[in-house]
View 1 (cartoon, rainbow, N blue to C red):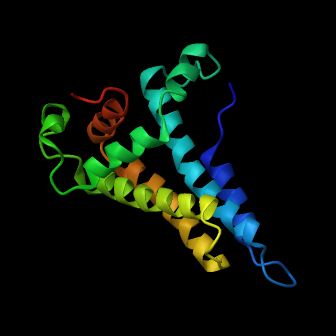
View 2 (tube, helix red, strand yellow):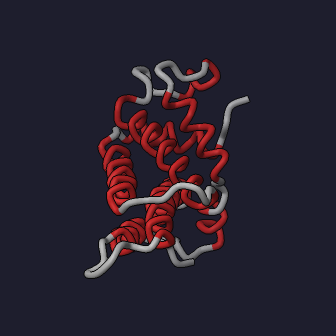
Amino acid sequence: MPILNPDHLFDQADRLAAVPASGRPRQVDLRRAISSAWYGVFHFTMATLADEVVGVSPRSSSRYGLVYRSLDHRTLRDIRGDIAKQTPPRRFAPYLPLDGFGADIQAFARTTIDLQEKRHRADYNPEPRYRSSEATLAIGYARSAVRHFGRASQERKKAFLTLLLCLPR
């Protein structure tokens, strides 16, 4: 199964958000840039989850594909909303590192919540008109989210990824 490389989605978003040599960028390009920025983060999260559970070497296996596709937008949104709070819900406590998720996982959560809202607005609300600067900002948020996740400790990353698959009841 081919993996969508988040960097390729971010690069695509950059190209779509760029101001053309003449005239203004088309609204459809700016909206797709914002959407591609979100999907870069979403595919990053799915690949990171599948890499953790199945491993990197069997990326073309059906098991890898099963884990990769197990994450949906709503679950990711709900978990990130809980993680972004200063104090996560009590039901998460037994599964967290002693000192919580930490600043980087919380920043990942907050940034991607905002980015997903921007994507929904760009994809489904016909009213707003976008500028290149707004699309470029969304792309920057997406790249920043990935960097925040990368800086988190392995223990915090694993706690986050585990909660994506196994939500406590």
